[in-house]
Image (cartoon, rainbow over all chains, first blue to last red):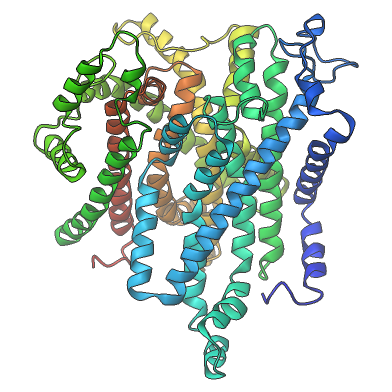
Length: 284
Length: 320
């Protein structure tokens, strides 16, 4: 595995990825959902999905309202698409935060070794010993429904996995001959890390990032379901599920569709992660 | 061996101190301090809050408060009193522990039984249709949001079919056949829902581990001496494959605790998860803090147990 920047690398990767039909299916689901939830505002402005139409309330799924309507007469399909924006955005942004923190600390620990490594790993141990979901719930209860904060906290709670991956790779890579050669040629530490170590540790980071999005979406939905995540007008799938709970016996579709979308999205990211793992692994 | 255990246990002490400091600090982070919720209540007077602050020692410097808190826990097992009911928090937790342990052990046994068998079947039939089907199912199980599948199970099995109660816990106080059946019927849905994720993830670990073992030379030797395939897989394969899996299971066991919070909320299961959630909603910080601390200590203990178990199971690990 060499740097993904080399020409032809992406084509090889895509050829290997394509063999994994479930992963390709997952990618299609993500692209379709992403385009639909971003593009929906071109056709129906958000204000229209928030308008109250009590004459049309609680209609079952049908030709006029594909996913039915809720207790306020709002179209569930359109609200699901707008909810997808929130879920996808939180999932991706939280993963970016986790990657930044994880790669930075993992690279620091793996490249520096010694005392720095020991300190970072102690920090990882502490993070792994605390029931993170409990902490997330507590912090979310302090600061109310602040989506940026929820995103940040989910991201900051998921960096240890990435950190450990990067550290382990760096520790073995830095003993390799090509790294020694780079040092001998007078490369600066920054150059060694950026040009030689990081590109070679990229595969597990990419896979971890994909699976991380799936995890972040689940965590955000769980927080919203418990009442501590997104709130209207930024209603995510988790919030819609929470809202549907009180009508669940008479109007189960209100809960079915948002949950099914969480499931489909998370499954899609997990499949893509699985496919990427196989495609990036030179041994398969 | 004794020295190994002792060294590992001593190594966990700095970790426990760091964790306790975080549990302490998290509650102090509450906007307006831990008593802010009381200030909002209409029938609470300002001077009562001052008195309460004095009584709780909130007017002292932070390090002193932290030290006093640690001493109270260490010497008297005193985790403080609930702001809401005034009960000792330790008693509240002990009262809820049996329900959570019942749910966790049922989910655990289910996940182990199903996950291990699925993993073994998958590895033995690697690359065949059954393996692909089980792999697909495992990814589905990992991706299912607990709160959604829980609600859908309630709609299907309680509302539509009427087979199982939708929530709660029953038949705990009596020891008759009827109460036992009621207890079991209440347990089935929450335990199955909670076990899904673990079942799926453990089946993947078991598959990977067994595949690794089945490629070893000693498996070829076992086959070469004419041993039947079942005996090869069961006696030489699974037994060795279990070593790393046991560690992963022990490491993940405490997360069942976290998973229980959502499961307990959906099914109104009166355990510690529900106790925590209720505490967060009501701003009952002594309770929240105590549950955080107790669960963190449990996690550290389980990790320690996993380390020791690994050393016991794998004779190649030296007790250093």
